[in-house]
Length: 552
Ligand SMILES: [Ca+2]
Image 1 (cartoon, protein in one colour):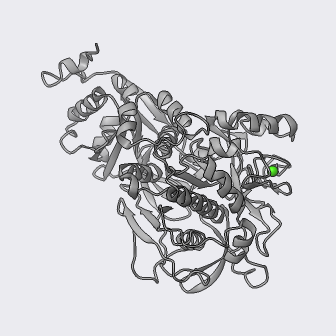
Image 2: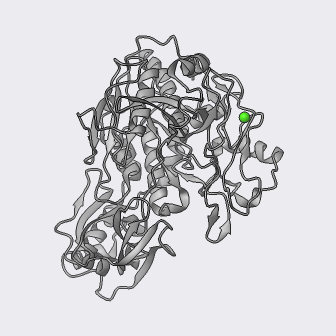
Image 3: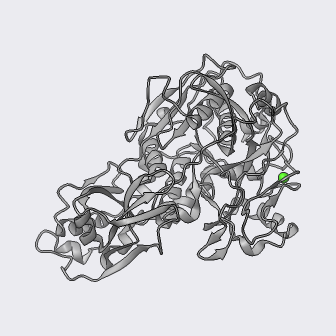
């Protein structure tokens, strides 16, 4: 029996007293260094506040999600519907009622909306209202690189009675993401060998793929990145469908498109035969920068036949810039999406082990998010793909250990072995008990793309993610043709494969770098025999990955 005392009086009187004690919900010391404060935000400015209600039974759900992804488990491949997930994790109705009651005390309940899943509440509020509600102090900030202006507060409070009922409140202390865009290098375009699709087909073994049409290959687009339906020179006929999520742009004018969108869609198209490709152009919503979670929620709401089997995401940022509660909530939502049967593939970042390499005043490697979320498969970078190999480490590929997420069970023995045999003298700079990444790797260097009708060469793990993701989609489409479920969350399976064969080829030479100009000497991680935090388990070899992928 559970009768929340506050609810018992709801409607009869204000159950949350006007002088109710407030608790600090979230705080940051200062704005990230590329945001300059202009002064107080305009009191009449309207922001859309977003509240994620606390989910229930998260640990229980994640145990189930892990079983579903663990080969040999009786639940392996038995993916869940959203209704089945909701039955486990849906917030208590008490949480929603308390939140609406609190909003009502501030005359904000009438305009508030609850999503169909019942876990996200949004409401428009003026800065004055938000400040009163959240006991916050919003200032206006300008990004020193882009000129973008936003209003944020360095601390947020909620009534004590609501602390355990809310997971996320934004926009508050999170200033948003930097773009993880491919590096453009036109100067060297004419002098250095580029990676072209035929190189990748040879090195990763997908050149003979024909006539696959089942399933859906998903490509995420954010931050106004758009893509042209014109493919590159090896792939003029295979386009994609653009779906607008939360107001994202799907221009029909081929003159309006950008490098990241074109890179991701062109290489996915090259690899995935005639499998339908969908580009999910996802808007920022009301400047709350929760677009990763917003896209995951959108995909969860789709019926199974409309959901992609793989989602390739070439975006991310330093974990330190993320609001911790939002990072955890986003990662939990990825676990849900994986449990429905979607393989979520993220780029590992383009800064090696970090750029400024200082966290809270201490020298430290800077892990990336969502690369460090344990419910995604993270792809590091290799060089050497032009001319079809051999591959070694791409120096700038992201790798490391999360400071938010602990080491998951499926990589425990693999990472423990690496730690035991690879003491590099720099262990004080990273959280060796954290989730280690990347999981796998693929070519990151000098990909030829077509943008605005011209050839360009681009580099970054933005190249690696769509390539690995597309190869996984090839396996998925054949599983679907064979009446098998898609692979879903990949990592427990990938880490169970004997290393160096069975679909993943070990990378053993080179080193990721980073922290240049900082006091950390010899920063980085080297590729070694077996898993390493530079290239993970290695790069894909499709014919073998297909073999093992069809029998799991
Ligand atoms: Ca290796």
